[in-house]
Image (cartoon, rainbow, N blue to C red):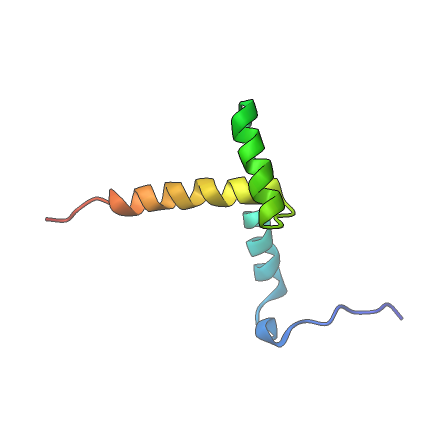
Length: 80
């Protein structure tokens, strides 16, 4: 008999096909490359060491997305 994964109670009544579709839509498949100079990379490394950041890519992704979403929020189309 194969072991089944325990499902969290949070998703007990949710269709598994829906959850699979949701996970697939969040997969990161588009790659972008960013170049840093020596001072910028040193600043990132210092920040990661000081605040014990284990994933530099997650840190950079979060910082970029915060800035993008903030800009979109500030400049949203106005109705009147």
